[in-house]
Image (cartoon, rainbow, N blue to C red; front, side, top):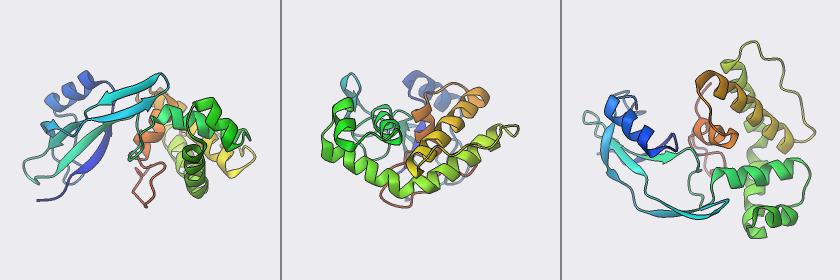
Length: 198
């Protein structure tokens, strides 16, 4: 039996349940329709307003027997902080703020923020191209995504442009939630996890 993988879904649990019941969640392994299959373990996320307990939904498709943990788009894989907190730090860094000052602004340890920034710098060039491609796929009339002055700033700008295009075409989500959804939670992953192809 294949191991469990991860899918990024909307942050609204009622919408996720409705999508599971209506057959709107597809299996990435075989293309079948996923149904509910219990829950993953409880975890605590650090949000902007403080800690929040989360127990992600699990799903399964009977034919291929694949199981999937359905993580809300408010998170990134293997990160305890929400994508909004991490995104705020990346936005500040794109504006040239140093990691210690960023850490103060988001209320996280400097070592944590330094780790986020180091990982994002490692994928910034790829992220800028990836999100610009998504922006143009979602809005073919969109002009060129303009350089913003550094690799990190270019990537953050491309995320913003893609998020605007995605929200207009597919439904409103916060920009950093789109970053999570389009990278399948892997924006800051330490491995070469597959991001969704535009």
